[in-house]
Amino acid sequence: MHNKNKFKKLFLEEFHIENKAKLIPFANYMMPINYSGGIISEHLKTRSNAGLFDVSHMLQIDMPANIQITNKLERIIPLDLNNLGIGRSNYSFILNEDGGIIDDLIISKLKDENDNIFFYIVLNASRKEIDMKILSNTLGGSNIINERKNFCLLALQGPESRKILSEIFPEIIDLKFMEIININYNKYDIFISCSGYTGEDGFEISINNNVVKTILEKLMEYENVSLCGLGSRDTLRLEASLSLYGNELNEIITPKESSLMWTISKKRKMDKNFNGANTILNSKKPKKIKIGIESCNNTIPRHDNNLFDNQNNLIGVVTSGSYSPSLKKPIAMGIIDIKYSKIGSNIYFESRGEKNKATIVELPFVKHKYKKN
Image (cartoon, rainbow, N blue to C red; front, side, top):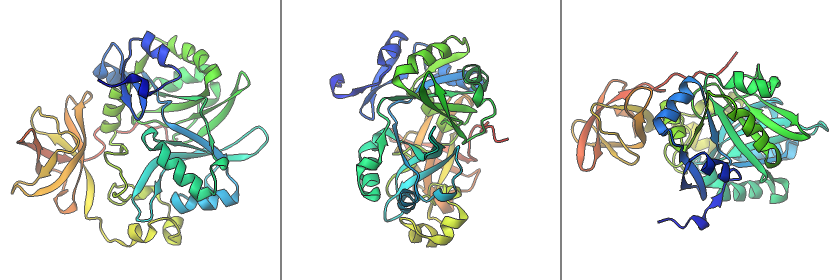
C-alpha cells in the first residue's frame, strides 16, 4: 500500500472526495483517476458535452519577457520567442545538449495591468525539479522565476465548453486555439487559454486559490459538465495522438523521432542556435518514428510491449496503449524503425508472452476539433 502522507494534496482534494473521486498517487500528488461514473463515461461525456479536469499538479511559472531572458530561454526552447505575439501560446519543449527532450511545455506571452510583458509556462508535474533546475541555471538564478504556487489549473474540454465558459467569462467567446487572455475577476488575475489535451475545443484556466471554489461552483451548475480524472484524460489524449512525457517523449528521443519538427520555426532551423540543433537538423531521415496501432483482437497493446515484424524481428516498442471508448477497440502509439512504418502494414505486439497481430494506422485516431478560425 502507498503511504498517502508522502504525497502532496491538491488544493481541491476535499471537493474531489465529496464528489466520490478515486484518488491515486501520480507525479507526487494524490490525483483523481476517476469519479463514480467511471473512465469510459467521463471520456464519452467529454467528447459529446464537456469534461472538467483538475490539473493543478502541473508546474505553472511566469517570468519577465525582456530581451535577456528571451535570448537565454531560446537556448533551451527551440521557439522564436522574440516573435511570439502577446496573447499567443505555443507548444514546445526544453532540449538537452543532445537534442533529447527534457520536458514538453506550453509557453505563452501576456501583458499585466502595468503593461509589463511576461512569459507564462506550464510544464509537467513529474519533471518539476529538473525543469526548475535547468531554467534557473539557464536564466542565472531562480529568483527570476515566479512559481505560481497558489493557483489551481482547471481544464474544461469538449464541444459544449466554449458556450458554458463564455457565460461566466464572456471575453473568451472568440478565443482561438493557442490564444490566451488575462482576465481580472474579483481583483484576481485569471489566465484562460484555448488549449487542452483531448483533441477537443477547450480551455485551461489558471485561477488563484482564493476564487477557484467560486468558479468551480458556477461550472458545476451546468448539467452537461462532468468531472473527469486522469484515466479519461489519458484515453482522450491517446485518441488525439498527443504525446505524453515518459511515454512518447524522453531525454533520448529527439523532436524528429517524435514527429514534432513542425514545432520548430524556419527561422530557428536556419539559425541553429539552440541545444542539440546540429543533431536534430543534420540527421537525414530519423531512424525511428511514432506510429498509430490498432489491435486485430481484443488484447490491448500496453506501454513497453515489444513490437515485431512478421519475421519475428524486434522493430519497436509500444509507448501508450488503451481501449478506445470512441472507437470501441484497443489502440496504441509506438516508436518503431522507420522502414517498418508503412500505414496498413501488419505488426505484432507481445503481451504476456503471446504475439498479437495489429495494424499500423494513421494518426490521430480521432480527428482534432480545435477552433482555428
